[in-house]
Length: 378
Ligand code: NAD
Ligand code: IPM
Ligand code: MN
Image (cartoon, rainbow, N blue to C red):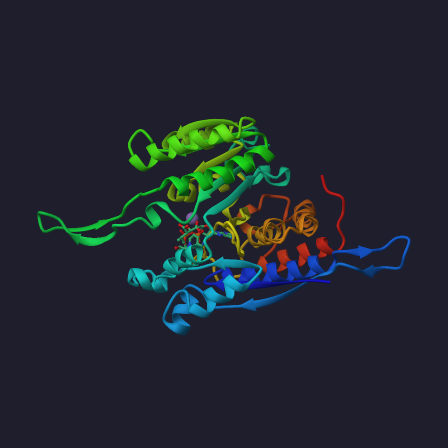
């Protein structure tokens, strides 16, 4: 039996709802690994067992301890084999000072785990083509990966803050800054990913205006010489936002900075049907990865059992694949999601007529059934 320790950070809003579902899916998928079944009696050889440690984070941690990322939470995350996060944030804490915002805790967590590479795949599943707001022929077959730089750029750049200008007016200011080594390392991650996909990398920047983007383009171009098998192109972010809804199939792998990646991945999610479908993996050079859906705490539907848990379930699959190297268990979960969709189950965000409308919990139960008895899927 293989044992992994997972730190669970349910967070706020729909976070706890989707995490409790994903936890059960992980448990079951792990317990089904490594069975030697034929011609011998069924006997678990390399079963995966998880020890889950749930820690407070975000608004929940603020209410409990006064800070959005308690030291105990960060150190538990750092010691774990992988970290699975629900979502953080909510109206209640929106007016908090910067250092007491749930969002600040999330940035501290990403920084504390040094997870600079955020992988956000957006795949249009054949089962969900009708859920996309784009026309069928535009959406179908889309399969792209946004590689978002996660621990630099305007989210972390200094100087930042509030002040007063010459006219005595209040100002708020931030700095978009990237260093060579920050760009080089995210570029290498993106080239490696593109190499294993369809060999096309599109770097998205604003090099016609921003110095940080000018250096970005120069360094990505330089790193390209290490990857002659990958075809590199560059695109301005405004055009990229437009191209994503015009003809998204042109994209294979996209590499971009922290803020552009945040925005473009939410845009890309809608091509697939819903933001409730998109998982992510955040990885560093070493240490545990952080896995989370790209959506937020969805305060508008929190506590109503309406959230789509599939983004978090698919994040758990990314945890197995990228965080633990357990590709087989990851595939088991991905297939179970496809099977559940094939059987017609849909949460409200991906519902279309003729399907079975279910809540978060029931969707989770159906996925568990599919994990347990995988049916061949298309
Ligand atoms: P959001 O992603 O929470 O919600 C946007 C819309 O998408 C809402 O209508 C919501 O109901 C819907 N939605 C999101 N996830 C869904 C799911 N799984 N199933 C069904 N519908 C879903 O973004 P927002 O409203 O801009 O932000 C709400 C809060 O979440 C804010 O406090 C924000 O800072 C925070 N946030 C946190 C994260 C994170 O924890 N990683 C990410 C984004 C936003
Ligand atoms: C995300 C979120 C976060 C981000 C916020 C909540 C800090 O939007 O994970 O996409 O901007 O990175
Ligand atoms: Mn976001």
